[in-house]
Amino acid sequence: MALQAASFLPSIFSVHREGKSNTSLKDTGFIGISLSDHLKSDFKSQTIRTKREFNQKKLSLGAVRAETAVTTPAINKATPEGKKTLRKGNVIITGASSGLGLATAKALAETGKWDIIMACRDFLKAERAAKSAGISKEHYTIMHLDLASLDSVRQFVDNFRRSGKPLDVLVCNAAVYLPTAKEPTFSADGFELSVATNHLGHFLLSRLLLDDLKQSDYPSKRLIIVGSITGNTNTLAGNVPPKANLGDLRGLSGGLAGLNGSAMIDGGEFDGAKAYKDSKVCNMLTMQEFHRRYHEETGIVFSSLYPGCIATTGLFREHIPLFRLLFPPFQKYITKGYVSEEEAGKRLGQVVSDPSLTKSGVYWSWNKASASFENQLSQEASDRAKARKVWEISEKLVGDW
Ligand code: LMG
Ligand code: NDP
Ligand code: PMR
Image (tube, rainbow, N blue to C red; front, side, top):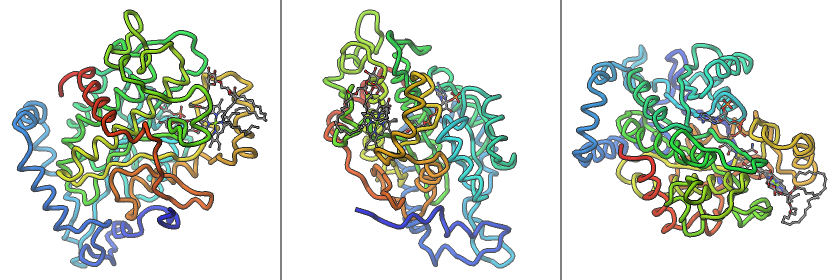
């Protein structure tokens, strides 16, 4: 079901530039959420915040509080025309040093309405990538994040809080794909590397930053976790072997440790391509579990997406050279599933800020005319009981927050 023609990025947000506003909050009902609803949900989330969260905040945010208190409010009423304007949004994008993440950073930077925090494991690479993509310095900051280390995730969150910036949107985009590996490799914490990076690192990051999203006064707060078609067995692409299958999660429960158990979520033999597809199923299940647990309470919009087959990105760097040579023409001319990095970046940019993509719990895809629609997930990728189990086991693996 096509929802809309893909009008890229919010026309409503045009209020920001040079303070020349011709759109008021009252006129627009802001990004599909009325201000009063927004305030209500914020109030609700304040009052039912648990004691544990409160105490933890006191500890970790003590030094930051004073700074955050002086940041520009999301809605500034003091323009010369007396109109209400929206401050720039702050968005964290993981893995913004390449491919989809970089293209999304570029697309958002070009609107002039976003401060982009590029959360990357290789600072120099990220700096060069931003430069060569032509993203101007005023639009981005690079912060170190290695998702394959839970310590690094916690450190990143501390550093981000110290910056005093509010958090309005979090994009969990980074991933690794190890299709030719014969043996598993492991993260700093001893988990199989693809599930550790793509799922567990993002799970901890999202869970920690949920509090920051809750505190933001931005009218449309979003948490996006990038999914994929190849994790969905209700599609042709999802039926190319090896297929995603989380089984009864026995390997995940065992800590994906390899030595005494299995490195695979389902407890089976290691297969790098399957581990990647399984990790994408976890990404899509996590988004839905977030939605069920927190959307009503917080008003945060939780989304996932399949941006199209971006056959030219660094994701395939570990694949054999023949694959890398043939895959782009195969996707362009045979499956016709190919999209450029630029187009994919615009699509994810829409999920970050388009006023029409505010329905929570949705897995977005785009049709041939590049119009977004709510896609169907496979049976496994929409299994509520499995989502809850994945959440609970992941919670145990990443430790308390
Ligand atoms: C696994 O193999 C590896 O085992 C694993 O280690 C990991 O690397 C993983 O996903 C990564 O791949 C997958 C392997 C098995 O697929 C391939 O290697 C693809 C080669 C297929 C060769 C087909 C020849 C077609 C020639 C076309 C022209 C040039 C372009 C070639 C580009 C190749 C890059 C993809 O795959 C299979 O088992 C193949 C069978 C797939 C079954 C899929 C189920 C749906 C069946 C639908 C059939 C419809 C056909 C459409 C036609 C498309 C191809 C022409
Ligand atoms: P790329 O390899 O180009 O980008 C992946 C990014 O993740 C890179 O910036 C990489 O950093 C970063 N990254 C990898 N490991 C870590 C880590 N441990 N800590 C922090 N960052 C890390 O791939 P894509 O742009 O294609 O992939 C982006 C997303 O899109 C992924 O979630 C992928 O699953 C999804 N996707 C991709 C599709 C495609 O066809 N390409 C299709 C569907 C979904 P570095 O630059 O340092 O290597
Ligand atoms: Mg797939 C409509 C058909 C379609 C689409 C949209 C994709 C996307 N692929 C399709 C079909 C096929 N692929 C067919 C028929 C084959 C067998 C020839 C095929 C094979 C194939 C391989 C070997 N495809 C692949 C691989 C990979 O290694 C990629 C992968 O699975 O990464 C996990 C991949 C992909 N195909 C896609 C997409 C989007 C990918 C890669 C990335 C991802 O899901 O994130």
